[in-house]
Amino acid sequence: MTIVSLEHLSKTGKTEVFAFVTMPNHIHFVWSLKALNGKEMLNTSFLKFTAHSFRKKPEETKNLAQFYVDAANKKYEFWQIDSLADHLFSKKVAFQKLDYIHNNPLPERWNLCTRPEDYHYSSACFCEKGLKHFKFLKDILDEF
Image 1: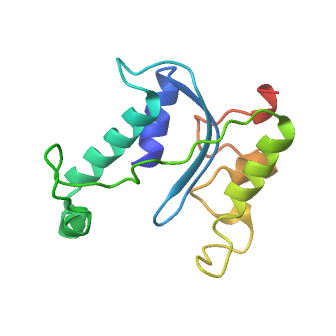
Image 2: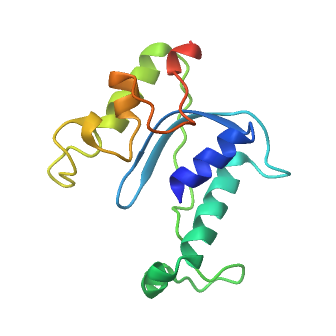
Image 3: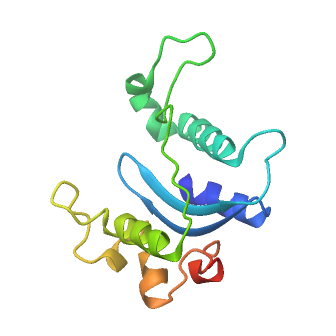
Protein backbone atom coordinates (compact mmCIF):
# COMPACT_ATOMS: atom_id res chain seq x y z
CA MET A 1 0.00 0.00 0.00
CA THR A 2 2.86 2.36 0.80
CA ILE A 3 4.51 1.80 -2.56
CA VAL A 4 1.21 2.07 -4.46
CA SER A 5 0.49 5.37 -2.74
CA LEU A 6 3.97 6.72 -3.49
CA GLU A 7 3.63 5.68 -7.14
CA HIS A 8 0.27 7.44 -7.45
CA LEU A 9 1.38 10.66 -5.75
CA SER A 10 4.53 10.76 -7.86
CA LYS A 11 2.69 10.05 -11.13
CA THR A 12 0.20 12.84 -10.43
CA GLY A 13 3.02 15.32 -9.78
CA LYS A 14 2.23 15.79 -6.10
CA THR A 15 5.61 14.60 -4.85
CA GLU A 16 9.12 13.57 -5.77
CA VAL A 17 10.45 10.61 -3.79
CA PHE A 18 14.21 10.36 -3.31
CA ALA A 19 14.46 7.62 -0.69
CA PHE A 20 12.27 5.36 1.41
CA VAL A 21 12.23 2.26 3.54
CA THR A 22 9.12 0.35 4.59
CA MET A 23 9.63 -1.49 7.86
CA PRO A 24 7.31 -3.92 9.67
CA ASN A 25 5.86 -1.16 11.87
CA HIS A 26 7.04 2.15 10.43
CA ILE A 27 8.26 3.95 7.32
CA HIS A 28 10.80 6.60 6.44
CA PHE A 29 10.83 8.89 3.39
CA VAL A 30 12.94 11.55 1.84
CA TRP A 31 10.50 13.35 -0.40
CA SER A 32 9.68 16.75 -1.73
CA LEU A 33 6.07 17.84 -1.57
CA LYS A 34 5.16 19.61 -4.81
CA ALA A 35 1.42 20.31 -4.53
CA LEU A 36 -1.61 19.96 -2.33
CA ASN A 37 -3.87 17.00 -2.97
CA GLY A 38 -7.11 18.93 -3.27
CA LYS A 39 -7.29 20.90 -0.04
CA GLU A 40 -5.09 18.48 1.91
CA MET A 41 -1.41 18.48 2.62
CA LEU A 42 0.21 15.59 0.78
CA ASN A 43 1.39 13.76 3.88
CA THR A 44 -2.22 13.75 5.18
CA SER A 45 -3.43 12.31 1.86
CA PHE A 46 -0.76 9.62 2.02
CA LEU A 47 -1.71 8.61 5.56
CA LYS A 48 -5.44 8.51 4.74
CA PHE A 49 -4.95 6.53 1.53
CA THR A 50 -2.80 3.87 3.17
CA ALA A 51 -5.07 3.60 6.23
CA HIS A 52 -8.19 3.15 4.07
CA SER A 53 -6.37 0.62 1.88
CA PHE A 54 -5.25 -1.37 4.91
CA ARG A 55 -8.78 -1.44 6.27
CA LYS A 56 -10.14 -2.75 2.96
CA LYS A 57 -7.58 -5.54 2.61
CA PRO A 58 -9.41 -8.79 3.54
CA GLU A 59 -6.39 -10.62 4.96
CA GLU A 60 -5.73 -7.71 7.32
CA THR A 61 -9.23 -7.29 8.76
CA LYS A 62 -8.54 -9.92 11.41
CA ASN A 63 -5.83 -7.59 12.81
CA LEU A 64 -8.02 -4.48 12.99
CA ALA A 65 -8.75 -4.82 16.72
CA GLN A 66 -5.21 -3.72 17.58
CA PHE A 67 -5.85 -0.40 15.82
CA TYR A 68 -9.26 0.32 17.35
CA VAL A 69 -9.69 3.72 19.06
CA ASP A 70 -12.67 5.10 20.91
CA ALA A 71 -12.91 8.43 19.07
CA ALA A 72 -15.81 10.43 17.68
CA ASN A 73 -14.22 10.95 14.25
CA LYS A 74 -12.74 7.50 13.56
CA LYS A 75 -12.80 3.85 14.54
CA TYR A 76 -9.17 2.98 13.83
CA GLU A 77 -5.80 4.67 14.03
CA PHE A 78 -3.01 3.22 11.93
CA TRP A 79 -0.46 6.04 12.09
CA GLN A 80 1.29 7.90 14.86
CA ILE A 81 -0.51 11.20 15.40
CA ASP A 82 2.45 13.58 15.12
CA SER A 83 4.90 11.96 12.77
CA LEU A 84 8.31 13.58 12.65
CA ALA A 85 9.33 15.63 9.64
CA ASP A 86 12.87 16.94 9.26
CA HIS A 87 13.76 19.53 6.65
CA LEU A 88 16.84 18.66 4.63
CA PHE A 89 18.60 21.98 4.37
CA SER A 90 21.94 20.73 3.09
CA LYS A 91 23.48 17.91 1.08
CA LYS A 92 25.30 16.71 4.23
CA VAL A 93 22.04 16.39 6.20
CA ALA A 94 20.32 14.69 3.26
CA PHE A 95 23.03 12.02 3.08
CA GLN A 96 22.94 11.48 6.86
CA LYS A 97 19.20 10.78 6.54
CA LEU A 98 19.78 8.47 3.57
CA ASP A 99 22.30 6.44 5.59
CA TYR A 100 19.92 6.22 8.53
CA ILE A 101 16.95 5.20 6.36
CA HIS A 102 18.84 2.61 4.34
CA ASN A 103 20.49 1.05 7.39
CA ASN A 104 17.15 0.73 9.22
CA PRO A 105 16.55 -2.95 8.25
CA LEU A 106 20.00 -4.10 9.46
CA PRO A 107 20.00 -3.97 13.29
CA GLU A 108 19.51 -7.17 15.25
CA ARG A 109 16.04 -6.01 16.30
CA TRP A 110 14.90 -6.35 12.67
CA ASN A 111 17.58 -8.44 10.99
CA LEU A 112 15.77 -8.10 7.65
CA CYS A 113 18.94 -8.16 5.55
CA THR A 114 22.72 -8.06 5.85
CA ARG A 115 23.30 -5.21 3.37
CA PRO A 116 20.99 -2.25 2.82
CA GLU A 117 20.77 -2.82 -0.94
CA ASP A 118 19.43 -6.36 -0.34
CA TYR A 119 16.25 -5.14 1.35
CA HIS A 120 13.55 -4.97 -1.33
CA TYR A 121 11.24 -2.43 0.33
CA SER A 122 13.82 0.30 0.21
CA SER A 123 15.49 2.71 -2.17
CA ALA A 124 18.98 1.57 -1.10
CA CYS A 125 19.55 -0.47 -4.26
CA PHE A 126 18.74 2.60 -6.36
CA CYS A 127 20.97 4.91 -4.31
CA GLU A 128 23.86 2.44 -4.03
CA LYS A 129 23.79 0.68 -7.41
CA GLY A 130 21.56 2.81 -9.62
CA LEU A 131 19.04 -0.04 -10.03
CA LYS A 132 15.57 1.47 -10.27
CA HIS A 133 13.12 -1.15 -8.98
CA PHE A 134 10.60 1.61 -8.24
CA LYS A 135 9.71 3.96 -11.11
CA PHE A 136 8.84 6.86 -8.81
CA LEU A 137 12.36 7.29 -7.38
CA LYS A 138 14.33 10.43 -8.25
CA ASP A 139 18.04 11.09 -7.74
CA ILE A 140 18.55 13.20 -4.63
CA LEU A 141 21.59 14.85 -6.21
CA ASP A 142 19.17 16.63 -8.56
CA GLU A 143 17.86 18.55 -5.53
CA PHE A 144 21.22 19.95 -4.38
